Image (cartoon, rainbow, N blue to C red; front, side, top):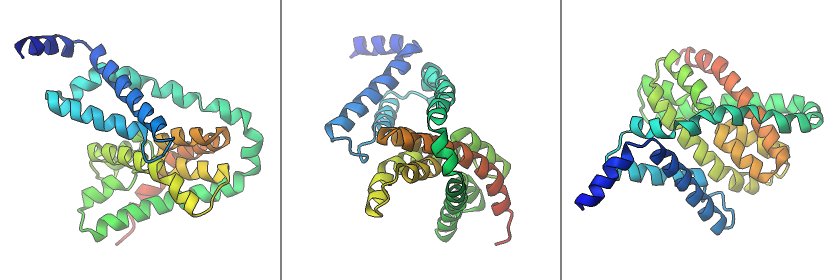
Length: 238
């Protein structure tokens, strides 16, 4: 055991350890996802997050130590987001034809996401800071955290809620939309991008390029709508 402890101390001081652990956890999640026949309920991100949490708890590793090693993955979020412009350009004619219903769906989805979350939290007796933290949960993490801080929420709590929202959205959107007999890839993509931001968008691209394109647009515009709507809605009396 002492030899293992010595090896662990050496490895834990190496930043690449946590980058490798992150990639290994995701690859395992992806393998389980394929083994389950591509079921959205076995989401690779959810599996990877659960595995990494268990490893961090078991080794007593702080999140900051983990992030110092895995931050290259965080850096790649920028290029990945910019790359969404490629399918947008390829499907621009479809997007332009669906501009009006897309705008209506985004407005309805953004307002519903905020009111449903804050209303449920209020009914469960949550405090003002918790309600403010949950309000922007369907936007991407940087936007959601900035909005939460502005309206008196807890940015760290918001970040966790955003991740949970994305994972649950990616897992449940397929079965829910299927049960509602919504098969149009444009509608499915818009729903995933609006409700489940980046994780939902990744799931939409698994459904097809058109669904992924509309999810990417919805994710970006919902972030903008959330930044504008949440402070206004949270300032209303009652």
